[in-house]
Image 1 (tube, rainbow, N blue to C red):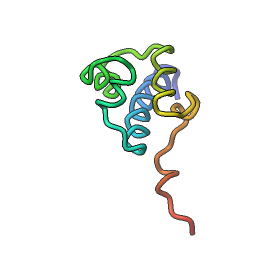
Image 2: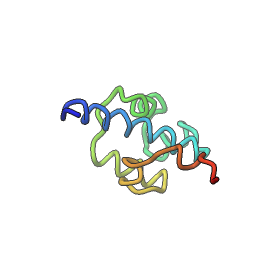
Image 3: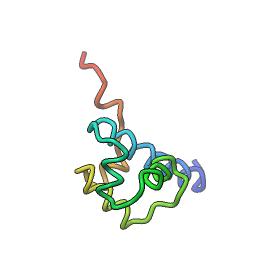
Image 4: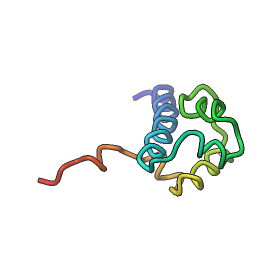
Length: 85
């Protein structure tokens, strides 16, 4: 895997993971945006990956979602829905 592809994939998955974690915690975009002191549309841009995410904003989001930054990077939704056999 080349470096550019890896960076693109990591960037996309972080935004996607933020959305998935928020949804699993049954939090609304409006709630998270209010906690971050930003507009709902501004927060929506973060979840869609339309804006660059700063480290400080990622830290704030992790606090609102009550997860570590590492968890956001490594989150795999299939873990939550896999069946034990």
